[in-house]
Image (cartoon, rainbow, N blue to C red):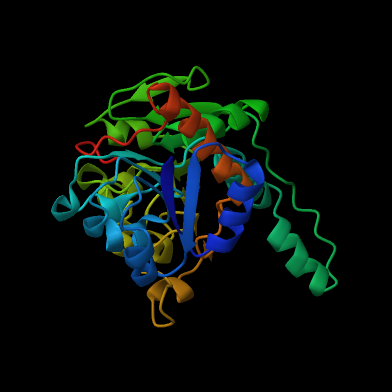
Length: 312
């Protein structure tokens, strides 16, 4: 019998789903409190939940063999002081559709002038401004993991040209041309849209800097759905305020929630979506765990295993 610690702000919902799944040889302890988790989950060999909570109890889980994170990003668990001999898997394969809806919702809003037309409507003005189109436009994906690959497939549906920037891999066939470090300026040149889906790593910190933003055409739009750390915030503000960049859509930030005093709130041509681009759907997340759990019982390799050295 394996014992699973569920530590999540949605602990009750996850417990209900696990109970309904009637998984064999699995007992569950569920809580949203790290303090309670330490008391009740000390003998658990499996753990499931949010990395920010799990990182608080990890030192006490001495018998832990495998942890399933419910986030794609697992930065709180990568602290060297928390390094232990266990398998860590993250959430992949469940955010791609939501991210595509988010990214292309904003791209279509931008090209079809939806916000501008609404303002004209409120002013009772007939607005015959010709709309743009996504077809033929060039989108650059800064990161082509599972989410980036889904964005590339959606881009092809709209007839777009796709560039990808990755550390080394070139596994997505929908990407027309790949770029690798240190060729980020060549990657950025000529893009209509830059979409950042990179994880938080030392190598990705402020990769979207003044140089990269300057390499983009003035009509380009930047969208960040990866991590706030990949963006040089001051450089973006300067580019938007000076008109060297047409616009930006930001879902993630260095500091969350974004404080009322932050310059982003008053930066022109900047849209903020408060880290809502892709939310974890409990049913889908339990499905990821159960698939891996069956693999675990059969002694097979687990899907979405995190490499502690690479950080993803």
